[in-house]
Structures are given as structure tokens and as C-alpha cells.
Length: 448
Image (cartoon, rainbow, N blue to C red; front, side, top):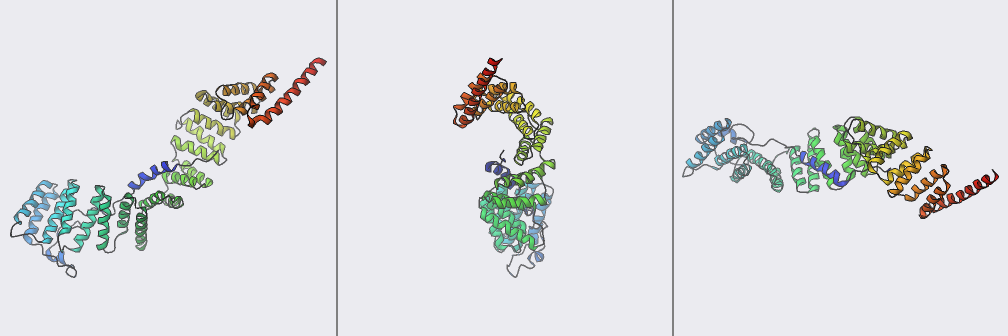
């Protein structure tokens, strides 16, 4: 009984869903009416403190600040329509000679972005953020936060190419990027099928986390696992799953790990991983329980296979189909529970009316010295095509008929079996033996 392996297509479905689930927002969206750190706009001196060394940012006038504060109060009350009207009025008032300077305009467009984001109007929020970045000499902190927020918004609308571009621009200006930012870029790379780039960025994120004495997050490993699998690197995929299973023991990790061990032909490990999931009570679906039974059979543990199937059938987790009952019968037979095996195989054969199942039953009946039923089952099999080896089924029929003393019928069965080259030798031996037996009985009859 060969060990089942998870097909590449099936496993891709499992991992593909997890990849998108692994897209954890590295930082909260930097959306706020004033300032990208979530605080209210600071006074002119506070805003520009520390910026003059690199950029000369224009001042935010008190009168403009007060009008922005009016809009902010409406926004805090979730009255975004009123907040937008206040901003529109501000823009109109300063559209003539008394124009807003670049820093004031940046704050206005930042506020617009906040309103549009709150209304789930992401395209307008993006346009507003782009207008923030279009202003010259804005504070460096504002540029850094805006670029990051812009990248996140591109994720929201699933424009991964622009999300990657925005993040790359952010990396060029951001001091000491956090590990999560590398992971976010890796997620964009993954969506664009840039698997090598994605892996590099995940590794950078993990290295940065290690530098900061932080533990890599579970979702980072999940993303790395998907990337290695998409690249066809089963060995590395398995190594990542081993880490996940050890640090965050869950059903999915052990089931997937079992599948990977199967692809690597590591049969004992394949069985061990699946058995861990089963004994932990995580395996309850029919397909997984049947797979567990196959693994036990492949691992020379037929009694355990039979127990899995028995419990699953009783709990109605496994449907009593012909195929499942046949597997149960095979497990019982390999566990030398022949009488119980017969019962299950009879049920399976009755449901399927399949030549192969009746052929198996004929063999078991013959082993149990129940020659009448062996002959009956063999004939049913032959009428249905004889199973995979009709010649073998005819040999079984001939042996059962011989044991019943029906020599002529047995000769006919062996003669048919001899027509197949695979059984020619054994059938000929039986025919020769039968001729001798028939002659011997004839002699005994004469003497009587």
C-alpha cells in the first residue's frame, strides 16, 4: 500500500489562501487630520524644530491653524461632510492673492486624505496624499508618514505595483525602517510574483527584528513558507513548516508538514506529523481520516488504520461508501482480523458490485476454508470482469471447487486461467494434478 501524497495543485490551494491572510499591516494607516503621528498639528515652532538643518519649512499661520481646527472638530464628531465644507471654504478663501504656503497646503491635503479615507473613498485619499507630496519643503516626518500611508492605500485597492513603488520610495527617506515595513514590501512583491525579491525583503525584516531583539512574527514565517513553495523549494518549505509547527502548533502546520514529507519521500516523518495532528484531536474530516488510515497502512500499522476507520465510521465522520468500507476491510485483513474483514468487504462488494472486491472476498473465503462462499464470490467477480487479474480469480475458483470435490468444474476454471500467460504455469500444474486425482479416484472406485 503506497503512501498518499498531497498533490502540488491541492497544496497550492492550501498555501495560497494563507499567503493573503499573512498580509498583516505593518503599521496603522497614518491617517489623521493634523500630522501623521496621530496628534493635532503643533505650533509653528514645534513643527519646524529639528527640520531647519535639512529643510526650510514655511510657517503655519495661526489663522490657518484655527480654520483647520474648526474642520477637525467636525471630523472628531464624525461629521465628515461639514469637515470637508470647512476645508473647501479655507481653500476658496486663500485662492487669491492671500495664498496658502506649501506647508499649509500639505496640511490641508493631508486633512482631505483623512476625510476621504474615513468615507472609504480610497482613490480620492490617494490623490490627496499625492498632493501632499507634491508640495515643496514639507517636513521630513510628514513626507515619511505620507509615503507609508500612500503605500498602504495602494494595498487597500490592490494596486500592488504602485504599493511596491511607494514603499521603495519610503525606504529611500525613512530612517531606521521597522521590520514590518520590509514584510509589507515582501507582500507586494509576492502579489506581483516577484518571489526572489519577496524572500529578500522577508529576510531583511527578520534580520532587522533580530537586531532589535524581537521575535519574528508567525505571519512572517507564513509568507516565507508560501514563497519557498511557489519557487518549488520543497526542502525549504518543509523547514519553515517545522519551525511553525514547533513554535505555533496547529492542525494546518502538521497536516501540511505531513504532505511535504510525503513529497520528499520521508515516509516515517510523513506518518509522524499526521499522527501528531490526529492524536491532538485536530483531524476530523473524512478525507483527512482516510488519509490517516492510508498512512498507517503504509507504515505497517494496519490495526491503527482499522481503528481510525472504525471510530470514524461510528462517529459518522466517514461515510460508509463502498470504497471506505473496502479500505476498512483491507485494514482488518492486514491486521489478521479476517472474520471482521469479510463482513466489511461483503458490505463494500454489495454496494459497489465490483469485480475486484468480489475477487478479494474470494481470496479471504479461501483462506478461511469457506470454499462454498469462495467459489460463489469468485463467480460473481468473473461475471463482473474478474477484477484486475481475472486469471487469478479463476485460479481461486478452481482451488475452491477442487476443495469441494468438483474436479470437472475446477478443470474448466484452470483451463480458462491457463489462457493468460501470467497464470499459465500454475494453471497447468493444477490441471496435471487434477488429472492424476481423477485417475486415482477412478481406480479407487473400481476397487470398491
